[in-house]
Image (cartoon, rainbow over all chains, first blue to last red; front, side, top):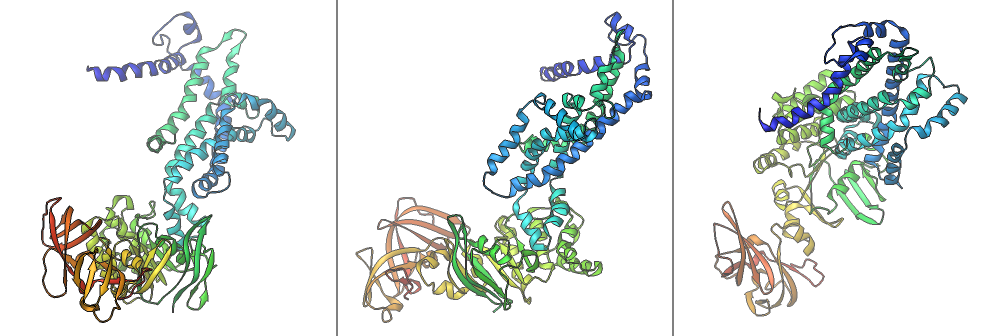
Length: 265
Length: 354
């Protein structure tokens, strides 16, 4: 083994160890987890997974999360696409300030918004709905999506727009038929970041829901019971939570590399 | 009288991009817009295409005011210096796109795209995406898209500038053939005087947002209306100096005497500015109408079978462009021979006189 490969190997070990441990724990019984320190499960069990995949209060939590995450991604992109196009193509009064103001929305911690959101959403009857969480998350995701997309769109020469108009395309026809496919890499990257933020965000998701739209991040807290924590179950839920993110990363990995190259991610 | 610009101007904020300009482009004509970068060539084309709206003035086409007609309805095509194609379409769909938007039926589209692809030697690439083509093929795709529909106006904005030398030479020969026999007005922007001369047709010399002169290319070349037009239409730059003409003698750089040649009788005695194109100054020469001058060599550029010699003469830098390879040493004093009959004479306000 050369010295060159040593550093990445050590790095990957540090990175993967906690994930391995989570996986390891998910196949153990809670007694074994609490009983000692074992590198692999001695009493291998799929009970935890069985519980999660058969108990509706568990698996529906994943469904709730996926619903509001997908809704949020769609909302964010639907708003960010035209906004990013405007920022990349037009000069208007205060455009740079507006762009910065958008970004500054991300600087506030979600906790700031929890109380007002809970009250306001309750007042309009949106409390404990998927839409509520999806809308709350757009506050953080639209600025991010605009920022990423603006970078990708500015990389497309404006002569492409002009050529399309000269060829006879109307603006909507051009935008959907030519421009959106041209920046598809950017849309992929923006969608990924919206998805991931919404998927892992807990504070707003937990406080804006109670039963009907309870997300997985909130459901995981119910493993605490009178007899202590059901750690095996918690670990299994954690492993399952990793999967959607891993799938999305797999699909957009090449685009993210491109996004980094454009200096926007 | 097909396309007419009537006192068109374009201002963006406080910047004037195009000063008030009037011009008439005839149907089936090939028009070259010649000027340096930032002369306003692209802006003028965008005004003609309708991508930008003029600040003042009107644009008329075939007797109709089209100033407020949107670009989509003007039936124009445009090719840019950058190779602009739709990245998500293959070559066939790229060429077909203006026809599809116009709602043409599939068989007719197929026939036309096939013909355009054949003209531009793209037949074997029709299934490829633009990113899989070389630069020359990408630009040929863009040109195919411009010629596939029967446009009234075809705008070419330095289409060959980003191609390598050999491709550029090839395309220069092919381009005029593509447009021959069409009714369309072709407007071709370039920074290179050689391209204007090669294409013939009409030339408009542009300088700082103005058309300084517009007319048949050979006329513009031989009789520039002022020094600026002559400067725009000369590469390497035209050599200038103050002279005074007395009968048979021209005095240049205060003490050098030349025969006055062809202007002996036609030009009244007086002080003028003379303009001499670099290719009329060579390293050898004889005859009654040759002026001799001495200069100190600053640099010699040899390209192929031509030598471009930059000299310091009387405090000014002059350029000579002559056939053959003449590797002069930097700093050496050399004699240059000027074909005086080809000189241009300008008055005190740089207006053309003879």
